[in-house]
Amino acid sequence: MNDPVAILPRILAEYRLPLYSDHGVIHWARVLENGLRIADATGADRDVVTLFALLHDSRRVNESTDHGHGARAADFARTLRGDLIHLDDDRFELLYEACDTHTDGLIAGDPTLQACWDADRLDLGRVGITPNPKRLCTDAARALLPWAHDRATRFITPTAVLKAWGLKLGT
Image 1 (tube, rainbow, N blue to C red):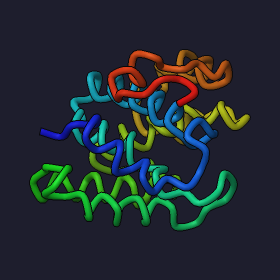
Image 2 (image 1 turned 135 degrees about the vertical axis):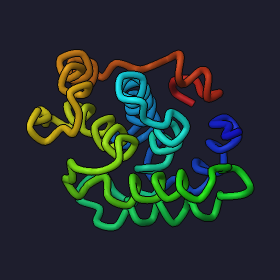
Image 3 (image 1 turned 45 degrees about the vertical axis):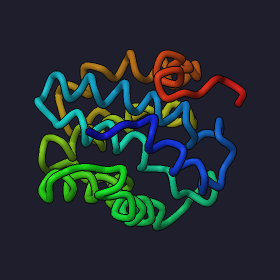
């Protein structure tokens, strides 16, 4: 069982940006909500989507262009495998690839990869970018676009997710 509450302290112990920054935990929580909705519609692996939401931006070193942060996140996931991340080889490789390539603009791939990439892209409104429906991988993400973009541009805080992760706003 992969427990986000157990994993999060390890992630945050080395997180270099402000916790509530553009690429911080509120973004991760919205990515989770987006991703689980996509997974429910497409059959993507909910556990991999959840881990992706937590990890994909966890190794950023700045808020702007940060080449390599996806690869660093993927490599960090590998260090947690067996201790805090429990996935078989095939599912772990999906998580690794999703993190590693999430900024590459890919749209073709396994449904779980697509769910991860789309979940992140749907939250681009937080940084002033309207996602292009043609750059989304799934019909499920295109259907969620108005809802997700509204939440991103209004900086909606998924308080239920933060609470489930053991976080409080402002801590």
